[in-house]
Length: 140
Image 1 (cartoon, rainbow, N blue to C red):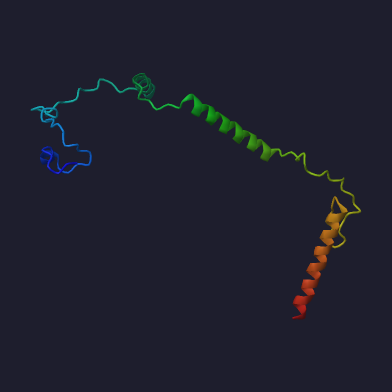
Image 2: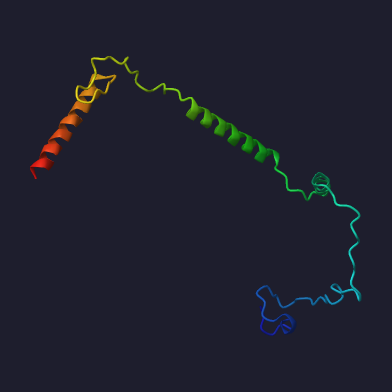
């Protein structure tokens, strides 16, 4: 803004000044009445549904739009599906089929029963590790 602009006298240093600002008097816009204005008395109390209807007609009622409502419905549907999964889980189609439990796949130490021979072998191996650690701990 130019330093010698006449408008700087009344608006001061202003970033958007071009040096050709026009002064506008806002003096009569905000005039206060000489005596206080009293609000009219309310003849009855309005019910909530009446207020909502009135605000809706004026465009002042906060409402959920169609897109948001569709999103909320989808979220509710997903929550319902998730709840059904937890209450009645189904086996995954990609999970390996487990052979029926055979009593021959039983751990001799603890009596646990396994569906696969490999699992029983891993279980027995863990028993051996536990036993070795127990011997080491008592030797100290």
